[in-house]
Image 1: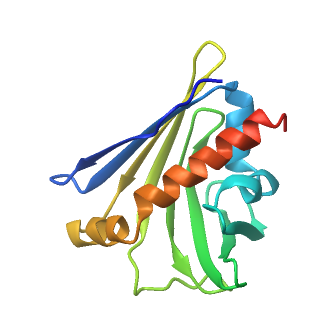
Image 2: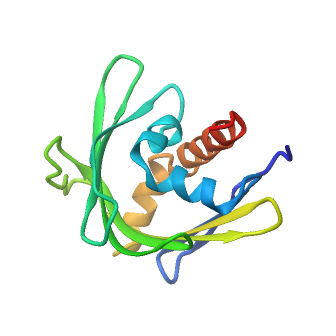
Length: 165
C-alpha cells in the first residue's frame, strides 16, 4: 500500500475548502464506506473518538444523525442532510453540529459538502469541496482543527479498507 496524503487547499475569495485524497481500493468499496452508517462508524471519527450512528437515511432529503464519542464518554452530535445523490460518483450534503434529535446548534456554522468519487486503476480519488456561507465560518471550522481531524479520519479509512472489509 502506498502512503497517501490528503491535499487541502483554501479558496478564501470563494469561501471554499477542497480536500483531495486517493485510496488504494475500488470505487464500489470506497463509496460504500462513505455512504453506509455501519461502515462510517468504523472510520469517520479521529482516534481516540469514535462515530456512533443514531439514524441514517441515505437518499436526497434524508439525513445521517450521529455523535462523536470521546474517550471519557462525552458525546458531540452532528447532522448531515443529503441533497443530491448520483451513486457511485457524487453526493452533496449540508453538515453541522446538532443535538441528539438533530436540531441544529446555531452556535457553530453549517458546511456545504460536494463529494466526488473517481475510479482509477485499483484506486479511488475522493474530492471533497466544502463551501461556507461566510468567510468567518470557514475560519471557525479551520480553527477548530478540521484539517487535523479530517486527515485522521481519512487515515482511519485507509486502515478500514486495508483490513479487508
